[in-house]
Amino acid sequence: MDGSGNIVRHLYVHVPFCARKCEYCAFYSAPGTGDQINRYVRALLRELELVAERLRPETIFFGGGTPSLLTVQQWEQIGRCLERLKLLGAAEWTIECNPATVSPDKARLWRELGVNRISLGVQSLEEDLLDRLGRVHSREMVYKTYELLRRAGFDNVNLDLMFAIPGQTMDIWRKTLREALAMGSEHLSCYEVTYEEDTPLFEQMRAGAFDVDEDLADAMYQELCEAAQEGGLRQYEVSNFARDYSRGSGRLPSHACRHNVNYWRGGPFFGLGPSASEFVDGVRTKNWSNTTLYCEMLESGRRAIESRDVLTPLKRAGELAGVGLRMNVGWDFDEFQAVTGFDLRSEWAGEMAALVACGHAIRDARGFRLTPLGLRFADAAAERFLR
Image (cartoon, rainbow, N blue to C red; front, top):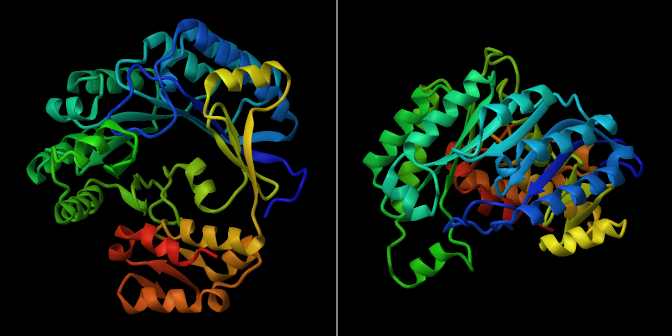
C-alpha cells in the first residue's frame, strides 16, 4: 500500500459534459453551456494546483462525459497549466473521444501536449443500434474520425464497443466485430449493456419494451473472445484486448492500458473533476457529482470532496483480490501478499476452493486465476472475496 506523503503516479480527470445523454449512461454527465464549461476548466486547473506537489504522472486519463467536446482553447489552457506545474511527459496519456468531436487542430494540439492514446467511443457500427443507445454519431463519422486520428499520428487507439444491445442479433454482432477488427486498432474494449436505474434504457426494459436474453449475451461474449484472438488481439482483462508486440514475453500485452492496470492492481491515483473517485494514502474519496458545487468549492480554494472512506487493510485486500481477478493473469500469491500484507492461501482458501470446484478458477503453486468461463462471471467471483 502507498504510504502517506508518497508521490502519486496516476491521474484521472472527469469531464462531465456530453452532446446528449446516452440512453444507457449512469455516469455523471450532462450537456453544458459554453460559460459552464469555461468555469469547469478554471476549477479543474485550481484542483490540479492543489495536488501537483504530490503528482508525477506516469499515466493520465481524461474520461467522461466526452472530453473531446472541450475546445482547442480550453485544451490549450489545460496544457499550459500542466506544463507550468511540470506534469507533462506521462508515458501514457489517454483521452476519451466520441466520433465527430475531434478536429485536425484539436488532434494536432493533443499530440503536441504529449497525448499518445485515444479511446474512441464507437459502441456500434449499426445506425439503428446507435439510435437505440442515444448516440449522436453515425457509422460514417466513426471511420472519418478514426482516419483523422491516424493522420494526426496516433498509433495507439482503442475502440469501445457494446454487445447485448436490445435489437442486436448474433449476426449483427459478428459483422460489427469483423468491421471493427478490420480497422486495425491497437486495443479493443467491449462491454455488455447494463441496465442501471435512473436511465432511459432501464425504464424501457422495466416497461417490457424488450427482453434481456442472457444466453445470447453469453454467446456474444464467447464470439468476442474468439474473434479478438483471431484478429491478433490478446485478452488481458474481462472486457479488454490489446495488440502484443512483445511476442508474448510479458505478463501483459504491449498495448494494454497501463492506467487501468493500475486500478486493477490497487495502485494509488488522484481523481479530479465532478464525481471523480481517487485512492491515495489508503483513503478512497469521491468528489461531488454536481458541476456547479464543484466549481464553487474550488473557487473558494478547497477540493470538492463529498465523501472519504478509510478502508481497513482486510477490507481493502478483499476488494483488491476480487478486482484483480478481472485480469487474465489473476494473482500471484507472493505479489498479492506484497501489495496487501495478506495471504490469499490462508484468508480466502474456501473461496478459492469453491471457484475451482465449479470450474471457474485455477489454482497452482504460484497463484490463482479465473478460467475463461470464470472471467465471464468475474463480478460474482469478486463478491466472494469481500470482507
